[in-house]
Length: 438
Image 1 (cartoon, helix red, strand yellow):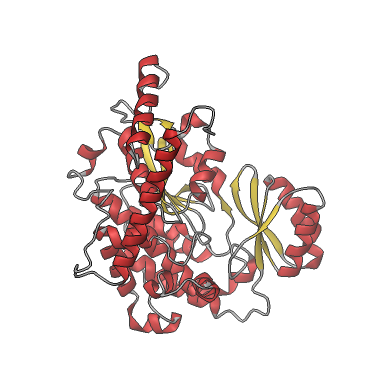
Image 2 (spheres, one colour):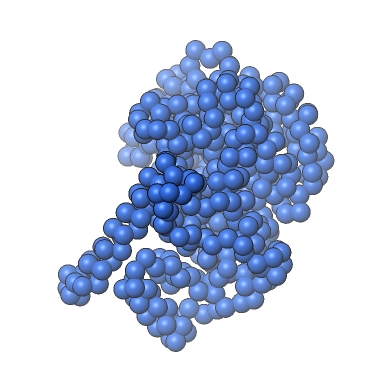
């Protein structure tokens, strides 16, 4: 149970007590209220699936609170950034930290972070640093899957390759994409429709250029990718049928033939990549099947990844078929977790949480998410190693004379202000009469 004030804690305790006494909670795991998870185990059959997002969750200032407040996350992110080395830093224009946490949040800074050669290693490093924090708490995944770029981070988290090799791989991949001699890098759009309707839109727009179904995110959302003119025609076709369209903030038409030119570069990179057989199951979102044991077959999947479509619906169902019931998005935002909620029935994902918010929230999202695996797998700690060694809700105070003063002290001030503001809102809500509460 996570609460940011005494009134909120009393309210959640009351909800929990009522549900448990009435028997409506069952044995769980179940979310009784936001930040209030209940489970009575053990649940040996409830496996943990770790989900990794691709591009799209990037934001200047992303997870700055976690960087300032959680040593394990900070040390892992710094280590992965350093693993790129000065040559790659020079080629991409700076360190990952300089793009994620620049001195000022400006439109120019957001644009730089969106560039593929920066965004891909930055998002992989953030996700793997959060995974390192989970490991410090004793949480281990059983099934690993990633959406688009996130599949590389999923493979590294499972142990198929080292986190350092993963970040170097996706950085080289991003640089190869930026080097493609494309007059039109293409575009991507998300359509609020099923895959068959999206394919019909792609066929209707094909006279204007290349357009393909790139991602099947959930049964009611499909992504198209291709040449810009063709995408505009597809958008017009969809909107003419009252289907909502959202243009994605990406640098290239990923998962389309437009990026097929990086295959030879990826083949060279993958051929030198040390690979291991992971203890958990890593699912390929292109095939909705576990990765093969043969390293050469794995390398070929990596080579084809840029142009292969992502069938995340079938991959989520495959994870549930392997026994996954606790779904945790490892990375910022909640998009991939929302795909799981929209795809799987509630009984197959009784716990489905995101590990971190894209916005500063006093680390409340993180603390709540950490409780998800705990409520659904009471035997998880004994199965996965020593007890947690790090507090998921670290103290939000830091003295001005601390050795880490400067930029971190400013972030700590922002964190305390955010925490106190939400605490005051909770007090105000508790003081209203029942008729005033909404």
